[in-house]
Image 1 (tube, helix red, strand yellow):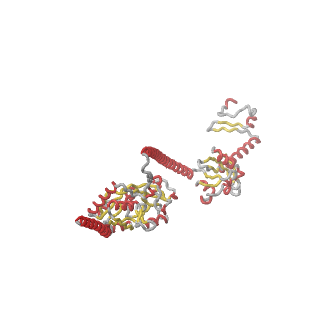
Image 2 (tube, rainbow, N blue to C red; image 1 turned 90 degrees about the vertical axis):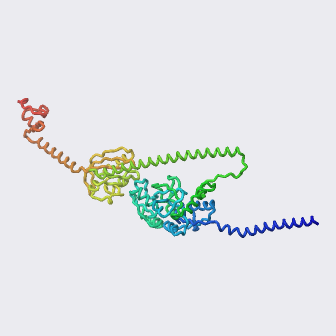
Length: 498
């Protein structure tokens, strides 16, 4: 009987424990949501269009490097994170009016330190000036000739004004206004944040896919910011940052920026793991060395190209100065087809003297052919000389020759040479006055000689300046000499013939 009672009591006791445990599970299941609700929430504000740090995606959800960072920070530190992404200026108003707990990422400045307290650094931020590729700007010196836009309240606006005062800067109230001005071509470019190696950077905004990095500006650390004096929250944030940095899962970059290597079989032989790890290490080391050398070579080539470009620009400036200010006429021609006809030589440059000789403006001649200006040029003989210079690259002197058409009857002499770019240059002079004077003098001398020859008067001429004496043939005959018996004298010797 006692044994039965003990068994009954034992059964009741065990049943009571089971029921009690089951009851605790039921109560716990009801209480669990209440416990979950006690998890603290932080409202974090930031810019709604700050690619790649914080922005609203195509579904209107927060995305970006800072968003990823704070989500993981919340998981590690036991906080619910809510984001309030608004315009940049309004982010500071939300902190001031206590509608947000902290700013998700901002660069500390003396002015901001008046109203905010800053945490330890969380993420690096690079900033640079991006320019439309179509403008053809290749150096920071050329950048000074362009107007760059920036948001008035941004740190980068003040940085450019202070560190790069020669850059023309136009300020805008919002990023939207700035983007609109860039797309409307009111300004040449704008400062943007980016990540990656400088040689391979493109603008992060899709509407600026043709914009490239021309001038890196700085690399700064982004910090969280709380309302001035909120030391309690700042301490929580800094403690959480430290915990985040030591966590195994901390990683703020988006998935597409990561390369994850994982093993599917955990029971792989140790020797295979060591060998595979060694191979991977060697490959990574080789890639690192090759990448470093490639980057170094690219930088060297880039520097060489810039140096050569500057030398070319200087040479071109010197050539243009000489070309436009020489006292002779000069023209630059691009050769089309086979260069056999005047119509194959298209005018690409005409200096001031050439325009004066032709009586035309630059707009009248550019793009025209040599045949358009000189209709009988194919019969003149200059085209074969120009073709030979074009083919051989050897300079050529084309002696003076008269050119005649309905508008011109002039003597020209030409010097022809070839530029490294393949264009042909002629330097020519109109020597019509000189040539006509020579012809007139020659005719006068012929007439004078003819008159002396057929005159019966003896004539001698004594140049008192040079002491040269000329005796006419008749004069010699009158004295009884043949023409070859009595030579003309450099100096007179009258006694010799007395």
